[in-house]
Image 1: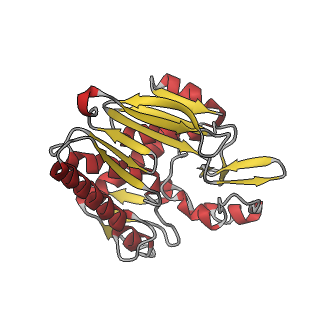
Image 2: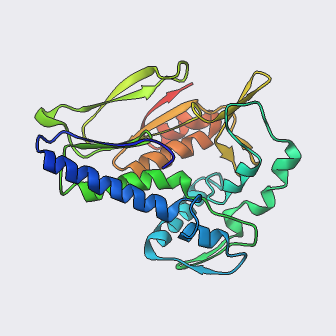
Image 3: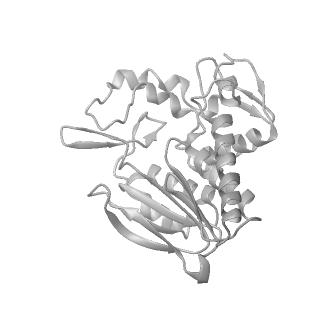
Length: 275
């Protein structure tokens, strides 16, 4: 998941707590192994190295690809799982190494879900193109792990790199207290949210950005241009029934740039945006 993952269990029974954590950890490892673009030999690697040949995928992968296709449509092409190749030009490591316009433009011909042929269960990418499910994988992992943990213990909070889901309150009915990190001071808390049931997901640039000549470049890229979105909040946190839904709304909001808050208000979402 490229981030710390935690399972907080409030049950007094140690055996129950151990079982809940074991189930969640195993599911996180399974999803990481299956869908990480950094792993060799998994389904994403098979797709990305097919060189134009069709690849038949399993049902779980097909559902994620259907979801990616839907997000592409809903965002007018701004959420695009083929845009991961832009990382060849952009490295958001906090430095001032902004790529040239030529380097970015050279990658755009191999970006675009509209160039992909997807008819479940068969996917065909043009040679040179790749998919990267990182934009939906962590939130999916939280929901998938929670589904396994729920029959064992409802007094849990799953936290995969800041994307969270509470299955129920702590002992005595107390909520879980979640902090939203400040965008002004690393490690400081901007505000607290009490969470009893449901999910929170956050998108932002506090960890991944570039800074050059007084300008900060957000790591959220517009795949239609290859350049970072402009005018977006530094951080957007969204509450929703599932982590997948919360993450989708947070990411789509950032892709709206300066209109992020207006987008979330139009969706009727509960959110917290920091600028």
